[in-house]
Length: 266
Ligand SMILES: [Zn+2]
Ligand SMILES: [Zn+2]
Image 1 (cartoon, rainbow, N blue to C red):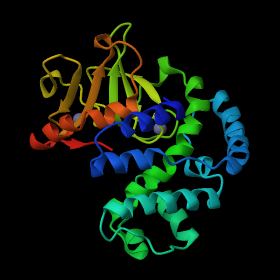
Image 2: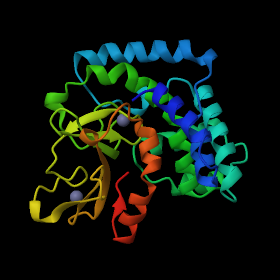
Image 3: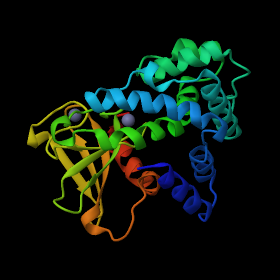
């Protein structure tokens, strides 16, 4: 996936009935790295890509945080959008060092409760702002680095570019192989169909999937960790599929999963 997929999704969402949720997602997906920052960011990515090409490694926080001012600006824009719709989620001019600390904790999947308290918003709102501030930066990394991933030898449960967890997947058109999609940078990677991408469970009796009448979408579930991941079967689609849009189109699957007692894994 790419910045083009994000732009295509923003365009399509613009034509939908503007519920609060759609409006929020459309505005957040519209966040972009300013043109004036692109040369700095691209030079940083070029240097990282050189190392990445030699030995695929999961990027660390220091690799993806090239410029504090760039990140703080995106964070502030994300917070502006989020605070329009979520009460009490406006961060009142947090120190850049605090934002960096929060970004570091988020990237490492560490607890953010203490930092959220210092910033004065809930950790859920903070996490949403950080995820969306990071998104345009990480997608740019993914565009350059994901073509370098050795797909045949990766097969791990985390994203080969940023180490993020998957929040969507697809079965490919050629052989129905399952690919996971990173919740943070949209990188796609090949993964076993008969293994839970969260706990590694391979016991077929405790892995299952539900599907809709048209068998276009699937909800993969695991009884061991009670986590689910959504999928689209590309063998049943025609034309281009925008995964950022599919995430939103399949909200009803999330609802069904929650009602059945499963949690998202990211
Ligand atoms: Zn990723
Ligand atoms: Zn599991």
